[in-house]
Length: 438
Image (cartoon, rainbow, N blue to C red; front, top):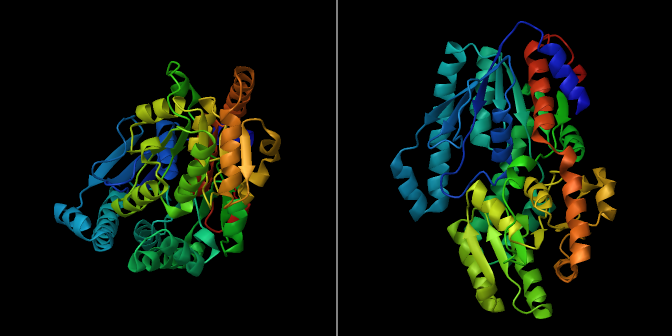
């Protein structure tokens, strides 16, 4: 991080302004700033340094509820009819929405690129193929530089077949169980085939950076880890502990939401009456599956599905809990942003052990972390109960260590690395070997 910050300070002396065109899309029905990628770009935009102008294309209503002099948001609208189709047939409606978004991004991006003389096209969430393709096309037409943030590039469960089986076992329809894994596989294949068109890739861990390199990327690959706004979280006063467990994130199979329900059934058997809150976006199909499981396990009254919450309500909910659980099956972020937020709140965290976590060996002996083997929800349940049974002295010890751990994950430092990379790309010689960035 020191290296990135020093580079930025050194290069800010150059009397040049970098105009950056940013491509974004977000779901207006089931995505909030809880999602890591959107949280990252919001925090980065809050910290745009001197010498940068951001021109952001985002669908309406935009995720940015604030303004600074260094960025402008241009909202493009998706016709209402496509949202009506979305309610009738989710997959058809989503496909049509993405198609329209891709067209609008290309034509609006083309106009802004020429008017503002942007040197760099920046994709904070590259995994969205319909956002990626118009950006690459404009990059080819105008020979601009392109910087991509890749937050995840692994197939959940390792293969289409295994992912399909997992979805079917959780009660999803045949069509949806086939569509989602195939959709991810096709997206990643097309993006991988365009790696040569990307000047710089920023990932979220060294593990993911290495994985992308093995996938064929030839340009510079760096990483900016997760961050947390501790001052914002600490601004909330102490909140009564009315919940035993809290989960924050998308409610999807690959995020371990159903493993969590299995674990919580065991927790209730060991500690009757234990209460769990589920926070985050949840589409109608997944919500039905969750509700069916709650009924099957007879734990409806102990698990509340809160859905998407504002940042303030999300933090208050985390603070009202005693333990934070995140049993994601594939997590390249180190650690997940919501895990850092829970640690600032003083909560211990129970996680499935991930390859990316091995970059931080200190967490394996840390009192606020409990890492269990992926899929072993029984051990996860035992660890949850162990934390819930701690006395006050033990709780205070874990809380202090949890908060201390987050001190180095400050968005201010992390954002400087990202901007140093963008500046390097903007000013780099086209003939220079891209492996030598930074």
